[in-house]
Each structure stands twice: as C-alpha cells, then as structure tokens.
Image 1 (cartoon, one colour):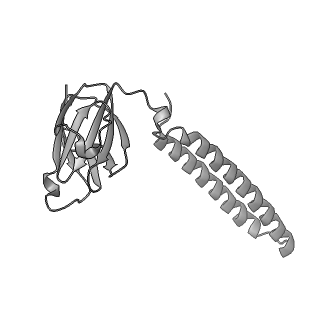
Image 2 (cartoon, rainbow, N blue to C red):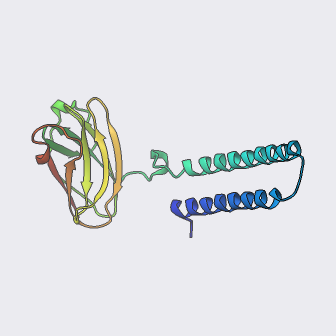
Image 3 (cartoon, helix red, strand yellow):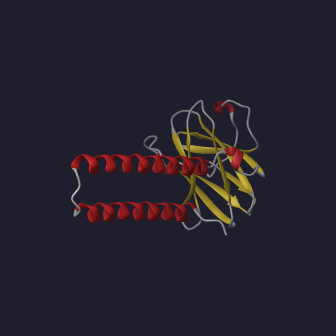
Length: 188
C-alpha cells in the first residue's frame, strides 16, 4: 500500500528530529572535552556544511517527488463528462460540454445532472465580477471549489462518489444578494 502524503511528511519530520537530537547530543557530549577553540570551530563548520548539503539534497529529492502528486491536469484521469459553468451576479448557469460562447451569451440553468462515480470536469468563468464556485456534499461539507473570474477559464475536476444533491454556493462576496447565489448538482 503506497504511503499517503501525510505519512511521508511524518516520516521526514521524524527523520529530521532524529538528526537534530543526534547533533545536540554530540555537541553536549563533546562540550566536556577540552579542545582548542579554533579546532572545535573548524569541526562545527565542517559538520554544518555536511548537514546543509544532506538537508538540501533531501529537500530537492522530496520536492521533485512531491511535485508529481499535485493535481496538474496531466496527472488526473481524462474526464467522463465536461460541464461549462458561468457565474454572474447573483446566480450560476451550467450546461453540458465546453461552451464557445461569450459568458454574456451563455445559456444554461442553475441545476445540472452528472453521473455518480465518473470524473467530471467543470470549466468555470464569470460574466461580471470574481465569484467562487464551491460544491458541497449532501451533508454540507465542501468537496471542491475554484474561482470564477471574468475573461478567464478555471478548470476543476471532481469525481462524485455518492449519489445525491450537491448544493453550489459562492464563497467570494460579490454584492448584496451574494447569499442567494445558489445552484445544484444532481448526482445519479
């Protein structure tokens, strides 16, 4: 079973803590012995240089390893369904497929049906101001979100694992009727 990102972080943290404790014990143990200050300084600088090299190399390896875990499109599966979403003051419009229309000309509804267990790609934009397209599960917990910005298309992929009605809300204050900016995704 592959390790989760949290488990990897815990192992790395534990390893770093062991190294720091070992270094502290070494310094405490060697503090009692009389040595020339210049010689001790030289040893510590040499040890510090090695420690920095090891830490920098480990950080670089972990960075390269962890970058492939980020949700870039090339690491996500191909979507089973694509939905275009346009936010406006104060509502959401959604329709199947990728729209080539300008946001002002886009036709859709504030409810859409998607299949359960399938990867759905949302192409999200806005007609007017910045909004935040947030999807909540039937229990009221947020499951995915992205910005809806004018003249820009954000993509959000999500796999709905349970059937139900998923409310959509705006998380970016966009005016007086912001709280009424609602939509719904029916997952069947």
